[in-house]
Length: 365
Image (cartoon, rainbow, N blue to C red):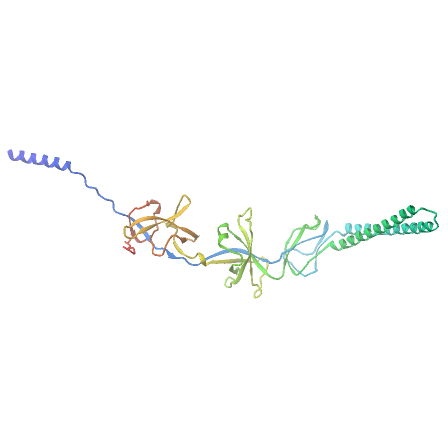
């Protein structure tokens, strides 16, 4: 019995002593993190779809107003220099010409009458039968009639020229790119009737997004590929860049000139322009490695000796399907966390692993 009492007292004492000990602190293991190194980015080649256009595309219009009575060509037709394209109703022009001719005849008759009167007054003046002021009045009437005849003849010449303006002719060889009127339509002087794509140099019209404007310069060398000849590329030059964006698409129109003499290029063909940007070739990382906060883009770089993550700001370039170009902020020797970046905090210790969950030995450990 005494033996059992001693055993009980020992058990109670052991329990009290055990309860007075401080609990041991168990540190959580480092969180696994997929670590990758930035890879050299391929040369950035951005492509833009476009349409083949003529270098010179004059808008053709009548020099006088009238009603369209004939239209000889349609959009897409090839025309020659001097070929009639459309004609206005000539009746109004003919009436104006007849009116101008009648005014010339009236002015001639008036001048003849004024000349006869002046000669009569000169004879009377020589005989001293009238005063000098009376002769001066007759002489001024004659001079006025002569001026009126000159004016009438000028108006007749204008009306005569306008008679030829009723027929719109092609100023040079080319293709009708657009037609804007129909027969029977009344148009004003200077209103566009056709747009002519003149023969000669060809260009590609493309639209550039606002994000690309700062990296593209006028005079930059590009490559042009026609959809009908995907295996052939021609060297081109960015000739023109609009200073203002289109109000609807918010893109900037650009024209690329290229050598089209060796191959037949038709207006309206589809093309693609490739713009190389070698100055921006740097490193690339997975899209999943990039985060953004308060308009600051950053990645998590692993410190090799301590395996702690450091928030590192970067400057990005163009996006790819699963990669993004880093222009500034990283080196090729850095190790970057490529997954689960939204769960990290500054200074957190991680266990670098690859995408197969195998441990990775960092350079510099």
